[in-house]
Image (cartoon, rainbow, N blue to C red; front, side, top):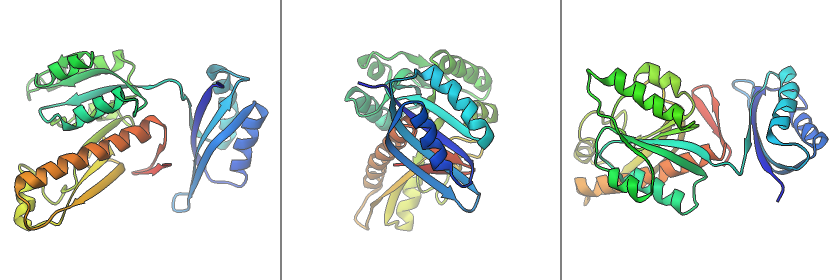
Length: 282
């Protein structure tokens, strides 16, 4: 089979961009298999994702040619080999539904990621990690040891060459420095009650208010807590017969699905940052 690549790019909008990109690929022996583009009239930015097959050049050669091509257009771009799964590290605390779901999906060939390590501030899931033959790192976090703990976490993340870090219900607030180091490659999941029901026991607060929807949001991590660019959201219906346990269970199910979709789209290079928003080529 021909090697297949994904090219993602964004740049100031101008006439002829699609023609220029397709012409570049034709010139270098690329056969376009799928393409999507979006012009944000509010920001004047153009976004594009192209999947193409190419036998003529390898990844390194294509990268060199692309660098020269992109410069006059002031493009931010990336070239990705579809045969290479995205190296990933997962952080988790004591709620394992998202972790368990991601591990199963990877094992089943449903997510194009390679999980190199699981990091947790608790020991709860070391056996689960072992059952999938994934290294498990227990790094306790306290106010006094937070800086040292994050330094060790980054050491593991960098050592694994991780392009993606998934906070699969990791119940610690990352420092501003940690957020900056992981900008654009760390995905968090939380219930969609935020900011309506902040703090402890959000489902108790929601029950008292008689909510009719429960949901979840997957977003990129930033220093603004739970306010990073949103990748995916979803909701499930609730009614007056639901208990707190019902709401929490429905919320967990929604969280697993939303996080899995966000991880899949990111690992397939379908998500492009657009300021505080995202463009998602599904």
